Amino acid sequence: MENAYDILKERGFIEQATHEEEIRELLEREKVVFYVGFDPTADSLHVGHLLPMMAMAHMQRAGHTPIALLGGGTAMVGDPSGRTDMRKMLTREQIDYNASRFKEQFKRLLDFSDNKAYMLNNADWLLELKYIDFLREIGSHFSVNRMLAAECYKQRLESGLTFLEFNYMVMQSYDFLYLYRNYGCKLQMGGNDQWSNIISGADLIRRVEGGSAYGMTFTLLTTSEGIKMGKTQAGALWLDPEKVSPYDFYQYWRNVDDRDVEKCLKLLTFLPMEEIKRLSSLEGAEINKAKEVLAFEITSMIHGKEEAEKAQEAARALFKDGTDTSAVPYTEIDSQKFAEGMDITELLLLTGLVSSKSEGRRLIQQGGIYIGESRVDDIGLKITMKDFDSDKTLLLRKGKKVYHIVKLI
Image: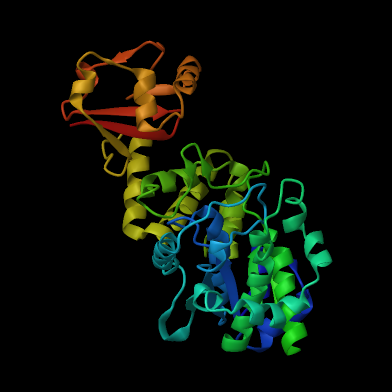
């Protein structure tokens, strides 16, 4: 079986590693328990989480044991990494609910049967700690000077770093120690912004237990222009179908820049590298075939094959002037609102195709808004009942590929 480190390296996952050769040798000679932490600060995972989830799945497929650690305890403190302000404080009830939602999404990628993977919540041990005992056993191993030099704290010193957040590194390090003691966990993986926390945890294990522990961070999922992927006009690209429909999810990947196709195929699908190289070598209009494969593979993985097929069929039908729009997102609006006519910009705002009326006017002036196949040229256009089809629907299009249906009720 191919070494998991080589798989992750070839596909472009790895940004940093504490001891590259030692980690590779460790993954070669034994079944390794490793973990990645996810703070449940929202009720769904998003595309930013997908890259570490994929890395965990590759590791499991290579014979290693993942721990998906839900930060029910650390979320009550808040990670200052990559932040210029303090995170919103959540209640225990909110955190527990969010964590329960995460579990269902993880099952799409990881096999939790027969202890092949674990899903744990650090609230189970962090909330039971006795403060003085914790300070004496763990706090004594941390240098305040070294902590303040860490990147995750440096950027917050000017705007103000609370003592609450200052504890985050100590708590995350203790997580690694706890998992080392109780599950034999020797490797922590995470986003590149977690580097300081990860190496602090490995160092704590060395100091307290005299054991060897390792860390690895992932590259950031960005476009060829260096912009974080997964940001849409409506916000984050969530994995929950109630937040982002499978059709919109599919369309996001179907519309990625040509330059990003190879990276996305490597990081976000399980396709063999030979197939990825073949698809990535397509040029001109042919690259759209690779984008279809990319969109289908990711949507199928997150939402199931049936939803991926529906999204693909709907997208193809629209591109080819077909009639199957069953998977296209829609908005239901009371027919009375069209009795006197509704401004096109107001309708665009109600459907979420634009974030403001001024943006709607600008898109119309640029020729980017269509009703059916007819381009809208008048920013003062009023939509009335006469504009709807016999089935009481109206098809809106923004640009070449973003569709939305308005249904009368």
